[in-house]
Length: 373
Image (cartoon, rainbow, N blue to C red; front, side, top):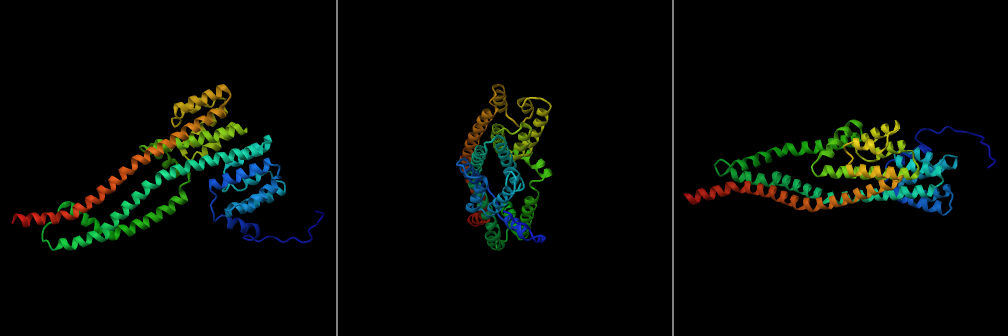
C-alpha cells in the first residue's frame, strides 16, 4: 500500500491476537461445524471466489465462536502468504490432521474444492455414525440412571421408615431384610463418598483419557467386551477404511496416510496396527499383507483390500469396506437397542421388586406367627 511504519510497540502477552485465542478456547468445534464449513468452502472455491474472500465469509457467518475466531486468524495468515494447509496446521486443536493433509493434497494437485468436498462428506458420515451410536445408547443409559436413583431413594428414605417399624417387632429380621437395613445405614457414608469419588474420577478421566498409558490399557479392554467389543471394533475399522480411502484418493502418500488414519480411528489398538503396517510398507511390502498379520482387521476386509491393490482401485475398495462396516454398525446398534431395552426393564423390575419383597418379609412372618397362634 506504499506505507512505512514510523513506530512499533511490543504487544504485551495476553492482549491483542493472543487474547482472541484465549477467548476462542472456551467453545468446542464439533464435526458438524467442520463439515458445514468444508462444504461451504468447497462450494465458494468451486464458484470462483478467492480463497481469502471465502475464509472471510466463513468467519462472518459461522455461529461457533471458537471456529469463527480461528477462521479469522486463518484468513489473516493466508493474506500474508501462508498456504491454507499451513494456516490450518497452526490450529491443531480445531482442525484435525485428516483435514489439514487433505487440504494440502488438494493444493498440490490443484483440486482444492474437491478435497474440501471430500472432507465434508467424510465428516458428515462420521457425525452420522456418532449420532447413531449416541441414539442407541441414550435409552439404556437413562434406564440405568433411573434404576440407580430409584435404589438410592429407597435405601435413603423408605427403608429407614420400615426399620423404625421393624424395631417394635421384637424378633430377628430375615437375612434379606437385615442386609437391606445394613445397606441403608451405610448410605450416609456411601452417597457422599460416591459423589466425591465420581467427581474426582471425572476430573482425572477428562485430563488423562487421551494419554498413551490410559489408552493402551482401556482400548484393548473395549475390544474384548461381550457384544460391545465387536461394535467398537467395527466402528474403528469403518473410520480407518473411510479415512484411508479419502486420503489415497486425494493423493496423500500412503505412509503419511496410514499414520493419520490410525490416529483418527479412535482406538489405540488400531493406531498401533496402522503404525506396524506403515513400517512394513516402508520396507517394500504390500498393504494387505501386513494388515492380515494384525488380528484386529477382519479377514474379509483384508481380502477386499488385497483385491483393490491388485486391481489398482485401492481407494474404491476401501470405500466399499467402510460402507459395509458402516451398515454393520447401524444394524448392530439397532439390534442392541431392541435387546437391551427389555433386559434393562426386567433388571429394574427385579432390583426394585427384590427390595420391596425384602421390606415386607418381616410383615409376612408376623402375620404367619399371629395366624398360627
